[in-house]
Length: 437
Image: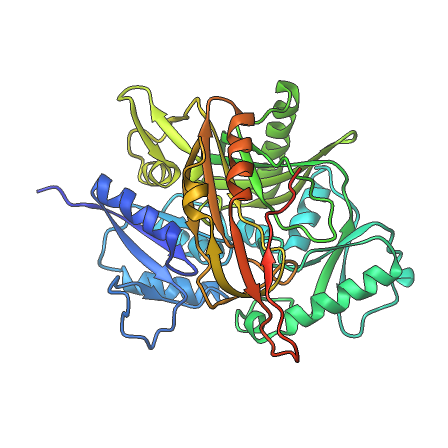
């Protein structure tokens, strides 16, 4: 009898993405051992036998995991989201599994440290500096130039990121960021450096995302996503990703070279990589390099085809095959164009109603719609927000067709939100589709 292969999957919470990994694991006959940051006092409420840890203390989390799997043969490891990656690196080191070195992953977790490493390696980098939020120094004394971007040092999904074009906007943005970082929800994460921010020069240009895979230091690009909507600020909520990219082949080659230089500078060596870049007349600039796969449900926009078997599967299965050194890890992305829309949140409020779902789902070339926001929950817009109303998916022969399908479907959706705090004359706001052109 052949023993099932086992893989450790570290994730901040169990949700849609982990369910996709579970479905892929069931298909491959693989056992997943979950490691999550849920409360250790809960008595396995989801019946998944997950190992409970605190990702903000990665060395202690690794010790807990190593103790839990001491008598279990583990064949591979993957981490979802940013918070779990450092703990995964320590666990992999303890088990002798191929993964990234903890120091490399720690450099990616801090926006400031990542900038320092890339700058010192000669990778294009805007000016930057770390600034204490309390008391906030006078920006002119720090040599702050405008426009600039204010960022928390460790949050993700563009949460808390604000563009400032002058001193007044700088001070207002810093005050708003401080309120966010002082909020109970953020303090509960125990993220480091919540008393400071990163200030860096604003980069003009188009933005792209890159999904890639490292195998013992060799990088393979899986997909380059165009972001057709401008991300000029003042906040940076993302919306549409489209692949394959419509950029010139020379531009795509330059992006790939910048990603290679970035991962080498950071010392990343094995596993998935997600990168964000800006392109302008001065070249390609890394915005983020993360040792993890694309987040949320966006992975559903990627399908791969194994030419030897004609089998097709999603990113989750490809990553399982890669981590476990199974055949098919070298499958290429399908030829069809695909796109995903992270349905934007234009107004903070309590979600009361969603209409137009059936009409959106039946739009030509739309392949899926997931409303992930729950009715009667409060949904925060950016920069305080970090989660979307849902996801729209499209597939077409050409990238333009996939993008246009998303825009047409989005026009048919209406989200009704009401203010969370009681007011003298309650007002109901119906959120129209974003004008993404």
